[in-house]
Amino acid sequence: MLTTADAIKSQNGLSKIVYGLEPTGNYHKPLARHSIRCDCNVVMVTGQAVKNNRHLLNGRWDKNDMKDAANIADLVSRGRCLYYDCPSPSIIEIRSLLSLRRRLKREEHGLRMRIRNNLLAQYFPELDRFYNACESEALSIVQYLLYPDTIAAMEFGEFFHLVTRTRRGTAQTLRLRKIHGLAVESVGCPLGPAGEYESDLLVEKLNQVRQQIKKTDDLIKDFCLEFSEYSYLLTIPGFGPYISARVLASIGDPFRFENRKQLIKMSGYDLCANRSGKKSNKAIPVISKKGNGELRYALYQAAMVASARVDLFRTYFTKLLRGRERERGIKTKMCVKLAAKMLVIAWTLMKKREPFDPAYLNIE
Image 1 (cartoon, rainbow, N blue to C red):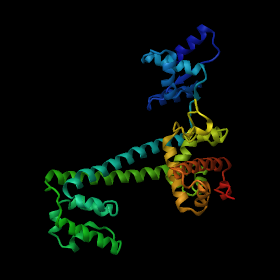
Image 2 (image 1 turned 135 degrees about the vertical axis):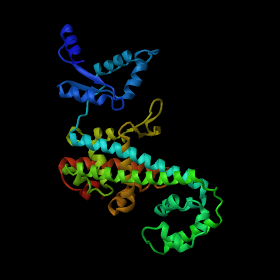
Image 3 (image 1 turned 60 degrees about the vertical axis):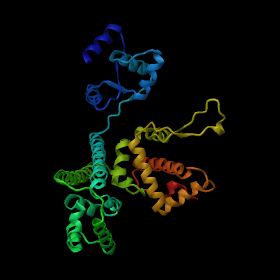
């Protein structure tokens, strides 16, 4: 590729070469990083821009590899591109681990739903209502005592001893006593060898995935501790280890953003509205959702926690709501606004290398 590009440059008397890539899964990464190591100018066009531009080039523009390349070249020639983001090796490792963690969390959720919607729904449906309140005990029941008749034939003391690992007090005892009583009148299906094997397998896989998530979290933390900015992000109320790691990995070098608008646009929290044929006061702006979805979700969760549990942020959130309490969906909108504010605060702390200061909220 490099030899061919140099030949074309010489034949046409061109001054420079720019390599344009469309991000498709992970396939573009080795080519982009190798080209950067070879001191090439590498830019990236978004998939949305490629899709929209395909219809602009020709109303009947079909899709194939050669025309995709021409489409990307047209976007690059008009400056509809960005320089390829190639952060430090540690940031790359954190991003890879966060991606792995997301896949593991998805697998964990799938296993939990299979246990509840398949096993409990068939063999012990009365247990499902207690699942969230006592998940560890419920998993023990699923793995060893899923058939209600087996529980009904046992004394409560023996049942309690088999399904509990730690003693949590009177509430736990009363809850398990209710489960023991419901097993006597359960309408569940008979449990055969296939169901026993499946229940044992799913619980083991769930515990294994959770151990893998914990190891992944520990590894993410080890890489994050290499950055002094990580400790400053942890000082923001609502920012735990995962959200701090997500923000650190998404921002990378804080000085690559010239202003807060670029930062908010990267997250997808920037506002846009369809004003064509409408008056400005009738156009309803909404967030674009074109940026980093994982970052946007993490910040929203941080904003919800901070506005509910931290006095400083609760005061700020109340100030945002003042006079608009009866508007439909206003709490969600203000939570989004607070999430964007927290992202800007995080960016500021990373640039200045200082802990969180309540003055950043500008509460009068």
